[in-house]
Image (cartoon, rainbow over all chains, first blue to last red; front, side, top):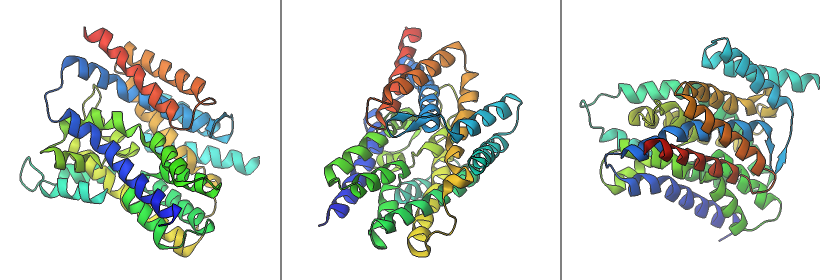
Length: 102
Length: 236
């Protein structure tokens, strides 16, 4: 087998195992108050980390580029109570425009 | 993966044959499926430029269903790396699905096998769309939301491999900010959950940024997940 196929199959198996782990190990038990308190904070923690790494991260470098402009535009739109899809659209448009002008 | 989501749906408990919650999830995911489709094209184009042929990239998208991990594998193999390095990079990037799976676990149904299959419906967009705040998740909505993502990713990959560069650089269209902007919107609604949520989000964001230059991609996000353990202090 080639390196490519070994990589494809091992990544697929590893991804499936990672996704299966939580549902299988935690099971359908009634969540404890401590568990719920942690899970409640998991969404804000994870989303905050995804936003900053996808906005300022470029492999192992922190960069300030056209993505920051788009995400900032989305933040302003959301603060002005724009619907989510409009905010996302404006973000993409602002980033595309910034790149076109650069 | 489609098998997991499909089987979960077919056996759907609750009101017999009520597929509305699944459809609502699928509808909510459609706009993001468009972005995923274009990213799929760019993955297909990249894979073809690396000489992967037609079958391998499409099979990869079907069985791995994971954009960030697949781009990482392309980057590692394209730079002359081996299968172990490629798999490790992908595992680190996908490790975030571990805590995400733990979070949805109480809402999935059936025995271990079925739960493992339903857990395959966890991708960033489906998980985030199905979050109902306060640590609660909507199982049917999440499974429904995963399906357009999978279809768009696979069809996009096939289009990129077979048809070539139909759209050009997705970055020219600003598509790389679709997901961060969307996650920001979901974060904003999570932050209404109180001061603790705001504090944890801030610590998580700072931690991820501080770690980013020093650790492999994917690790900052997993490390940031650990800040949710601060919840144990309030639970006592």
